Amino acid sequence: MFYQNQKLIVHSGFMNDTHAESVQVSGEPMTFGYWFWHGGFLVFISYVIIICGTGVFIKHLFSLLKKT
Image (cartoon, rainbow, N blue to C red; front, side, top):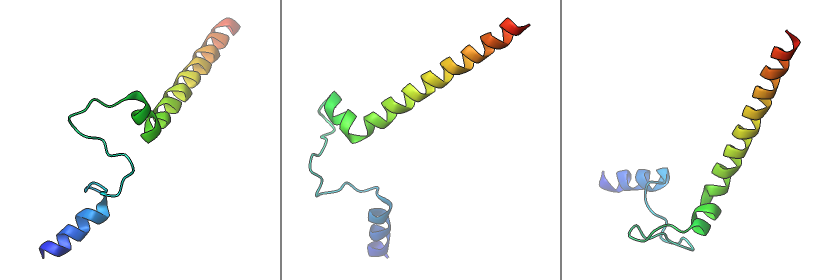
């Protein structure tokens, strides 16, 4: 029973990958480079898209207000 649960936990991705190239130690502060190359760029791009979309929306609202 324990072996089956262990296989499920490993398959779900909750256990650390022991063969990872660069392992982040929990006691050390995370560097910007590590964060950026391990998924941070997706967060950064998402924020840029949200900011640009908000700007387009506000520009559209002001163009509607000018028409009236």
